Amino acid sequence: MTVSIIIGAQWGDEGKGRITDLLGSKMDVVARFSGGDNAGHTVTIADQIYKLHLIPSGIIHENTTCLIGGGVVLNPKVFLREVADLRERGVSIEPDRLLISNTTHLITPAHIALDTAKEKALGDKAIGTTQRGIGPAYSDKTDRSGIRAGMLAHPEALADAIHAHIAAKNVILTTIYGAEPLDAEAIAVEYLEYARQIAPHLTDGVGFLHEALEDGKRILAEGAQGTLLDLDHGTYPFVTSSSPTASGAMLGLGLGPKAADKIIGVTKAFSSRVGAGAFVTELDGAAARRLRGSGENPWDEYGTTTGRPRRVGWLDLPALKYASDINSFTELVLTKLDILSGLEEIPVCVAYEHDGERVRFSADNDHLLACTPVYESRPGWSEDIINCTNFDELPANAQAYVNYVAEQIGVPVSTVSVGPARRHTIFLS
Ligand code: GDP
Ligand code: IMO
Ligand code: MG
Picture (cartoon, rainbow, N blue to C red):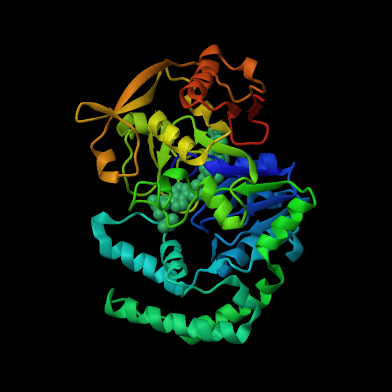
């Protein structure tokens, strides 16, 4: 079998984009399976930094075909802007190299307006969404009233669907949220133009993938978000509206549960989260500033999509073990080990305490808010490790940190990254 899946093992932003880029050179197909342009995946190639939101990070490798799978929600405006930006930077994008599944659902301005209005109405209970219309688009899909990308090939039906969709959403926007109504005709005209440009990218995504597998091609599924943001298994309601897990990859691409041979969990060497919700190992003050960085480096902890400062904390092993259990990780990738250089001691959360009892991570936000972390201190290292190219070159305590994580989770660490670029990668196996 030849399907590998890259999954965020925390709350997103673990470095999935750069790992997809690394593995992409050996792949024939790179496919996104969930989420939309709420994702922000950074790929650093020498002095070039690419920030991809919707288009799979594999696009930078000329030999790969990229697929936006049926589990994704696609904003056509963002898609076309990203295509234009990449072309401007010299990435060749022909429609047969960047495919969109007919069953992918479309995001409309009404979804974005609803996302914004709902967040505003929630006040201090807001989820902290990226306001890209993700939740409302998935709600329509579940409600069986969404508009699929396949309709972009049928302009008349598309125009009718947009009119009906905007009319229905205008009722909600104006009566429930007191927002301005949207102009259905203007949006229909806008979407007809998108349809003209996007129709050549449309395909039967499931058929394409199975044909690729029959031809012995290698497929990489690029996760977005992270396991702890999963609609079912994350810290509900502070989650995204899709399934960023290995099971979600199979669902979003139309593959069977036995199709994957590698399930790669990507985790930072510490933790971060953007948006609201429980975060047991969260730090504040100077300790947080130390992990987050000041914002002057491109890799400092500020959102790729929204620019918001990320919340940060120590590595959380109960949460990582939970993610491993949910996804059946076959290997772990540990990113941003370099950020821990210079710390004398590195606290790692090894358990949660709740009412004096040791408990596991569970998808219950209120329960997690009442948990306190139990820390074990790991010895740090003072050396700068960014130029280490193999495991033996890492300081002994850095090696021990990596080995410790693998032992505690019971999954081997296959790759460690010590900087954002391709060369800052150490392969252990
Ligand atoms: P993704 O959403 O999982 O693809 O991750 P993001 O791109 O949103 O955030 C990860 C950030 O960390 C980006 O700025 C990456 O360039 C950067 N990065 C990834 N791995 C490393 C690493 O090992 N060291 C450092 N310093 N930066 C890294
Ligand atoms: P990548 O792929 C980090 C978070 C938002 C918010 C919650 C719901 O770059 O790892 P949504 O807009 O999805 O309805 O927001 O999910 N979120 C992410 N956080 N990385 C992401 O993607 C995220 N995508 C969504 O901050 O808390
Ligand atoms: Mg990101």
